[in-house]
Image (tube, rainbow, N blue to C red; front, side, top):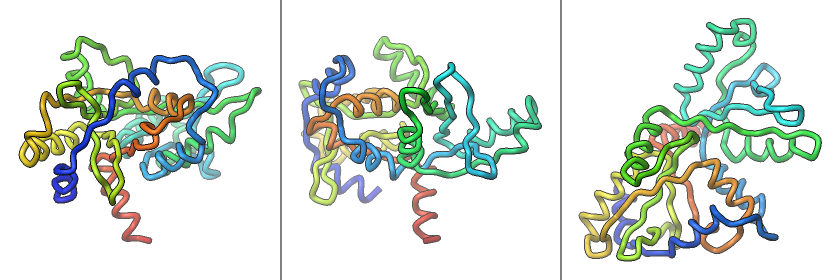
Length: 243
């Protein structure tokens, strides 16, 4: 929390029109380089069901497309496997819950997709974040239609996206957890109330964000940093200690 407080006093603003227009424009010639997307997603721990050969559990969408579930929570992955054990025990017995970085599985999906076949990733949100997102969207007169919700802050007279300083770099934080972004809001209101007016949380879906990064390349998107949930942060810290 000390880190959040320190960053809070260096609050800045960037134009919000860029992100909005990027989600509503046809595919341009240039996209964010794949390596940049891998880098953005690499630090986010997620969970999958894999067999003893590390092949993920998948399902067929059509003749060319196979999908696999990517869980944002270990508990959700275990609950899915438990239910699968009740419905199809012979299949469930072949799989286990495995930790993997979001960047790694995204990279695998790209390398295993071509004109004849495609590996699609289905991002599975937690129930808590779905309910939080529904409340925010309802207040805005919108509807939740599935997917992993991410949270981004807007503020100021023109409702621009908020930025912070991290190691001397200006970034646009996008959060996986409502609880975490609310803590940031509280800190900003306490330490820099004159810089934060009409602060608001906006919902972006993880799948939509990744899809936009695959189509657009501009300075705004290069500033985006994904902020892990508390569970993800614990996993990151545990892995660092083990290493």
